[in-house]
Length: 248
Image (spheres, rainbow, N blue to C red):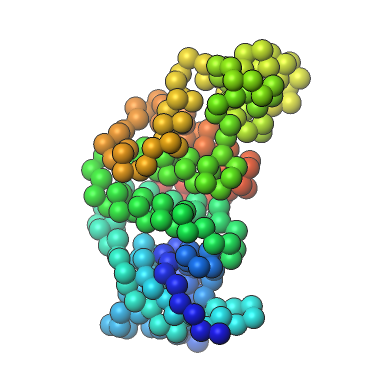
Protein backbone atom coordinates (compact mmCIF):
# COMPACT_ATOMS: atom_id res chain seq x y z
CA UNK A 1 0.00 0.00 0.00
CA UNK A 2 1.31 3.44 -0.93
CA UNK A 3 0.73 6.34 1.41
CA UNK A 4 2.36 9.58 2.42
CA UNK A 5 2.91 11.62 5.55
CA UNK A 6 5.00 14.43 6.89
CA UNK A 7 7.53 13.80 9.62
CA UNK A 8 10.92 14.62 11.04
CA UNK A 9 14.09 12.57 10.72
CA UNK A 10 15.33 11.38 14.11
CA UNK A 11 18.42 9.61 12.77
CA UNK A 12 19.63 7.48 9.89
CA UNK A 13 21.89 4.45 9.60
CA UNK A 14 23.60 2.81 6.66
CA UNK A 15 22.71 -0.76 5.74
CA UNK A 16 23.95 -3.11 3.04
CA UNK A 17 23.56 -2.67 -0.71
CA UNK A 18 23.71 1.16 -0.55
CA UNK A 19 20.50 1.37 1.38
CA UNK A 20 19.72 3.69 4.26
CA UNK A 21 17.48 3.05 7.25
CA UNK A 22 15.73 6.26 8.27
CA UNK A 23 14.13 6.59 11.69
CA UNK A 24 11.17 8.93 11.32
CA UNK A 25 8.70 10.56 13.67
CA UNK A 26 5.70 10.80 11.35
CA UNK A 27 2.35 12.47 11.80
CA UNK A 28 0.26 9.54 10.58
CA UNK A 29 2.18 6.55 11.91
CA UNK A 30 4.24 7.84 14.84
CA UNK A 31 7.79 6.56 15.15
CA UNK A 32 8.77 4.19 12.35
CA UNK A 33 11.86 2.89 10.61
CA UNK A 34 11.87 2.95 6.83
CA UNK A 35 14.40 1.72 4.31
CA UNK A 36 15.28 3.61 1.17
CA UNK A 37 17.65 3.49 -1.79
CA UNK A 38 17.69 7.25 -2.24
CA UNK A 39 21.40 8.02 -2.31
CA UNK A 40 22.90 10.23 0.40
CA UNK A 41 25.24 11.91 -2.07
CA UNK A 42 22.52 12.46 -4.60
CA UNK A 43 21.62 16.04 -5.48
CA UNK A 44 17.94 15.19 -5.45
CA UNK A 45 15.49 16.77 -3.04
CA UNK A 46 14.88 13.32 -1.64
CA UNK A 47 18.45 12.92 -0.39
CA UNK A 48 18.29 16.20 1.54
CA UNK A 49 15.03 15.11 3.19
CA UNK A 50 16.74 12.08 4.78
CA UNK A 51 19.06 14.08 7.03
CA UNK A 52 18.42 14.57 10.78
CA UNK A 53 16.74 17.85 11.84
CA UNK A 54 14.74 17.79 8.60
CA UNK A 55 10.97 18.11 8.41
CA UNK A 56 9.86 16.48 5.19
CA UNK A 57 7.08 14.81 3.27
CA UNK A 58 7.58 11.12 2.63
CA UNK A 59 5.86 8.78 0.19
CA UNK A 60 5.92 5.34 1.78
CA UNK A 61 5.28 1.85 0.61
CA UNK A 62 3.78 0.10 3.61
CA UNK A 63 4.26 -3.64 3.67
CA UNK A 64 3.06 -6.08 6.30
CA UNK A 65 6.01 -5.46 8.59
CA UNK A 66 8.19 -2.86 6.86
CA UNK A 67 8.16 0.61 5.34
CA UNK A 68 10.09 1.84 2.33
CA UNK A 69 10.57 5.48 1.32
CA UNK A 70 9.90 5.84 -2.38
CA UNK A 71 10.01 9.63 -2.53
CA UNK A 72 10.92 12.42 -0.11
CA UNK A 73 11.02 16.19 -0.18
CA UNK A 74 12.08 18.84 2.31
CA UNK A 75 9.40 20.95 3.95
CA UNK A 76 11.76 22.66 6.39
CA UNK A 77 15.43 22.06 7.11
CA UNK A 78 16.77 23.28 10.44
CA UNK A 79 20.24 23.51 8.95
CA UNK A 80 21.14 26.45 11.20
CA UNK A 81 21.45 24.07 14.14
CA UNK A 82 24.50 22.47 12.57
CA UNK A 83 26.30 25.81 12.47
CA UNK A 84 26.36 26.13 16.26
CA UNK A 85 27.91 23.34 18.36
CA UNK A 86 25.82 24.03 21.47
CA UNK A 87 22.56 24.15 19.53
CA UNK A 88 23.49 21.01 17.63
CA UNK A 89 24.20 19.09 20.85
CA UNK A 90 20.95 20.22 22.51
CA UNK A 91 18.95 19.35 19.40
CA UNK A 92 20.61 15.92 19.13
CA UNK A 93 19.79 15.22 22.77
CA UNK A 94 16.13 16.18 22.29
CA UNK A 95 15.78 13.98 19.20
CA UNK A 96 17.28 11.01 21.05
CA UNK A 97 15.12 11.68 24.12
CA UNK A 98 12.01 11.91 21.93
CA UNK A 99 12.84 8.70 20.06
CA UNK A 100 13.13 6.79 23.33
CA UNK A 101 9.87 8.27 24.64
CA UNK A 102 7.80 7.25 21.61
CA UNK A 103 6.34 3.75 21.28
CA UNK A 104 6.62 2.38 17.76
CA UNK A 105 3.77 3.15 15.37
CA UNK A 106 1.71 5.19 17.82
CA UNK A 107 0.70 8.54 16.27
CA UNK A 108 1.31 11.62 18.41
CA UNK A 109 0.69 14.61 16.11
CA UNK A 110 0.57 17.15 18.95
CA UNK A 111 4.01 16.02 20.12
CA UNK A 112 5.34 16.24 16.56
CA UNK A 113 4.14 19.83 16.40
CA UNK A 114 5.82 20.52 19.74
CA UNK A 115 9.11 19.09 18.45
CA UNK A 116 8.93 21.21 15.30
CA UNK A 117 8.19 24.28 17.40
CA UNK A 118 11.13 23.46 19.67
CA UNK A 119 13.57 23.17 16.74
CA UNK A 120 12.36 26.44 15.26
CA UNK A 121 12.84 28.32 18.53
CA UNK A 122 16.19 26.67 19.22
CA UNK A 123 17.47 27.67 15.79
CA UNK A 124 16.98 31.38 16.49
CA UNK A 125 17.54 31.40 20.29
CA UNK A 126 20.74 33.03 21.53
CA UNK A 127 20.78 31.99 25.22
CA UNK A 128 19.06 29.74 27.74
CA UNK A 129 19.22 26.65 25.53
CA UNK A 130 19.05 24.36 28.56
CA UNK A 131 15.87 26.05 29.80
CA UNK A 132 14.20 25.43 26.44
CA UNK A 133 15.19 21.76 26.58
CA UNK A 134 13.77 21.40 30.11
CA UNK A 135 10.51 23.00 29.01
CA UNK A 136 10.27 20.58 26.10
CA UNK A 137 10.94 17.57 28.34
CA UNK A 138 8.35 18.70 30.89
CA UNK A 139 5.76 19.15 28.17
CA UNK A 140 6.59 15.79 26.58
CA UNK A 141 6.06 14.01 29.92
CA UNK A 142 2.75 15.82 30.41
CA UNK A 143 1.54 15.08 26.87
CA UNK A 144 2.54 11.43 27.18
CA UNK A 145 -0.01 11.01 29.96
CA UNK A 146 2.48 10.21 32.69
CA UNK A 147 3.47 13.70 33.77
CA UNK A 148 3.99 14.43 37.46
CA UNK A 149 1.16 15.40 39.80
CA UNK A 150 1.88 18.98 40.83
CA UNK A 151 -1.44 20.19 42.28
CA UNK A 152 -2.05 17.67 45.04
CA UNK A 153 -0.12 15.23 47.19
CA UNK A 154 0.33 11.89 45.43
CA UNK A 155 0.04 10.06 48.77
CA UNK A 156 -3.07 11.52 50.43
CA UNK A 157 -4.60 13.26 47.42
CA UNK A 158 -5.05 16.55 49.29
CA UNK A 159 -4.28 19.96 47.80
CA UNK A 160 -1.51 20.87 50.22
CA UNK A 161 1.78 22.74 49.74
CA UNK A 162 4.58 20.62 48.31
CA UNK A 163 7.19 19.55 50.83
CA UNK A 164 9.02 17.18 48.54
CA UNK A 165 8.95 15.55 45.12
CA UNK A 166 8.85 11.77 44.83
CA UNK A 167 10.15 10.27 41.60
CA UNK A 168 8.66 6.76 42.16
CA UNK A 169 5.30 8.07 43.39
CA UNK A 170 5.09 10.52 40.50
CA UNK A 171 4.69 13.97 42.00
CA UNK A 172 4.62 16.23 45.01
CA UNK A 173 4.28 15.01 48.59
CA UNK A 174 2.95 17.13 51.45
CA UNK A 175 4.84 17.55 54.74
CA UNK A 176 2.58 15.17 56.68
CA UNK A 177 2.95 12.37 54.14
CA UNK A 178 6.65 13.06 53.65
CA UNK A 179 7.34 12.02 57.24
CA UNK A 180 5.81 8.61 56.57
CA UNK A 181 7.60 8.21 53.25
CA UNK A 182 10.99 9.03 54.74
CA UNK A 183 10.36 6.75 57.71
CA UNK A 184 9.62 3.69 55.58
CA UNK A 185 12.46 4.42 53.16
CA UNK A 186 10.28 3.19 50.29
CA UNK A 187 10.72 6.33 48.23
CA UNK A 188 13.54 8.81 47.71
CA UNK A 189 12.22 12.30 48.37
CA UNK A 190 13.65 15.45 46.81
CA UNK A 191 13.04 18.45 49.07
CA UNK A 192 11.33 21.28 47.22
CA UNK A 193 9.32 23.21 49.83
CA UNK A 194 11.44 26.39 49.73
CA UNK A 195 13.01 26.21 46.30
CA UNK A 196 10.03 27.20 44.15
CA UNK A 197 10.89 24.42 41.75
CA UNK A 198 7.32 23.10 41.60
CA UNK A 199 6.04 26.51 40.50
CA UNK A 200 8.74 26.66 37.85
CA UNK A 201 7.80 23.21 36.57
CA UNK A 202 4.12 24.17 36.42
CA UNK A 203 4.99 27.31 34.50
CA UNK A 204 7.04 25.39 31.93
CA UNK A 205 4.22 22.88 31.39
CA UNK A 206 1.35 25.38 31.29
CA UNK A 207 2.87 27.92 28.91
CA UNK A 208 3.62 27.51 25.19
CA UNK A 209 7.25 27.33 24.16
CA UNK A 210 6.91 30.65 22.35
CA UNK A 211 6.15 32.37 25.65
CA UNK A 212 9.35 30.95 27.15
CA UNK A 213 11.49 32.37 24.34
CA UNK A 214 13.32 34.87 26.55
CA UNK A 215 13.34 32.94 29.84
CA UNK A 216 16.54 31.40 31.19
CA UNK A 217 16.70 29.63 34.56
CA UNK A 218 19.66 30.25 36.82
CA UNK A 219 22.25 27.49 36.99
CA UNK A 220 21.15 26.08 40.37
CA UNK A 221 17.47 25.87 39.44
CA UNK A 222 18.28 24.46 36.02
CA UNK A 223 20.51 21.74 37.47
CA UNK A 224 17.90 20.69 40.07
CA UNK A 225 15.09 20.60 37.53
CA UNK A 226 17.26 18.68 35.08
CA UNK A 227 17.93 16.02 37.73
CA UNK A 228 14.22 15.66 38.52
CA UNK A 229 13.09 15.42 34.89
CA UNK A 230 15.79 12.97 33.83
CA UNK A 231 15.21 10.67 36.80
CA UNK A 232 11.45 10.94 36.32
CA UNK A 233 11.70 10.07 32.62
CA UNK A 234 14.01 7.14 33.39
CA UNK A 235 11.62 5.74 36.02
CA UNK A 236 8.27 6.29 34.29
CA UNK A 237 9.15 6.03 30.58
CA UNK A 238 12.33 3.95 30.82
CA UNK A 239 14.27 6.70 29.07
CA UNK A 240 17.88 6.06 29.93
CA UNK A 241 21.27 5.46 28.34
CA UNK A 242 21.01 8.54 26.13
CA UNK A 243 24.35 8.84 24.37
CA UNK A 244 24.14 12.60 23.88
CA UNK A 245 23.11 13.29 27.49
CA UNK A 246 26.61 14.04 28.73
CA UNK A 247 27.04 16.73 26.09
CA UNK A 248 24.26 19.02 27.40
